[in-house]
Length: 463
Ligand SMILES: *Cc1c(COP(=O)(O)O)cnc(C)c1O
Image 1 (cartoon, protein in one colour):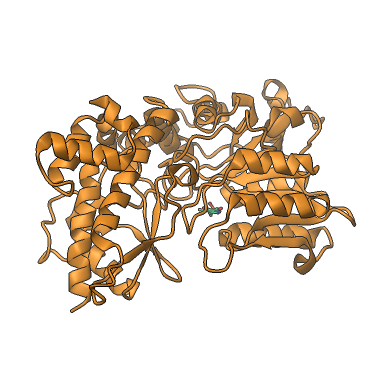
Image 2: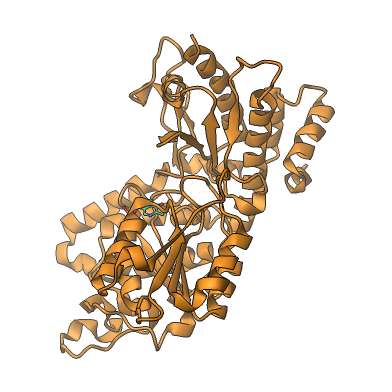
């Protein structure tokens, strides 16, 4: 029944409940989805914490020996089992080979990150030479802006979401000041319409059309971290280019979550971190993308020896032979220990494709949405019953795996009661619970357990 995964999620739930003769809310439906999920085995490559090991768990309420309900891959992905093995290999190499580790072994330190770039490029729909693994996300955003943001007196604005991730907001603010402009004049912040939670594509395109001549760079998230909205990156890129703007995306919440085609969409530049859906561990190695069309024209503003052609890098001539495109933006030699955990995760992605993961994700998140709506739609006949509003768009084309939930009751208590019962998700100020079933390792059973637990948490928080 693999075709189930091509149905609209509500149809799929109804079909399975009909087939099994059970209620659409029965856990048997979740089990059936899991049995028919061709990617189910991928979970076995990750370490899922036990409930007893999570600090907020209350073992008088739940069985601590069970795996937790981990719906927090949008914040920190789970540890791939091979991470420890690869780290130990390099610690051994360091102990036994010391400086020779730079050039010897399966992962020579001097170019270790290069071995991962084809896997990373596949995940974002780029050519290998368009992607560089380096630094942290905010650092990469700065390095890219230094080359793409060249404001003039008439074209000095940067268009971004009003509630962009704080680091992106600060980075852009400081880039504007660095160039002698004022954020109040040059930062164009786009808000949803009054009463709406997410931006309409038409409104984004409209602003670009109307103000594009004054916009130097359009800099959006791929998936909005707070609302979970997936932007139409291709349409935004096209609209920006029509007005002569550069268009870049912060793909922190999009990479490993939705299908990206950075090359085909002709995105000018992008950056992302690897510790969210890409599971490389906190502070993992980040990435940058520059479209190949810019490889000989867009140059790095800041140089380091890692931007030098690898073949002659160690001749120490002090005459820069700059690598083309994003490779010229490298500055320092790579943290090999960060390469290890990222490799462990990318190898799991490499066992499947983003297309297959996305197909599962649409059903997995659709199933979550179905159950939330079933139990927690506002009911005027029961004014005291708590209800949940999903602020994430309901069209799968406009979202990734995350749903952002707002509650009719105070959220903090609900969140605490969920945590006591072994759920890992996160609360974001002012009032949203972010729940993200990651298709790489979450199961339909996880979603069902979450809904059961949410019922208990809401009951407990209203007493
Ligand atoms: C997670 C995230 C960051 C974090 O930046 P770091 O430099 O990795 O600390 C920045 N921007 C966005 C959009 C994010 O989602």
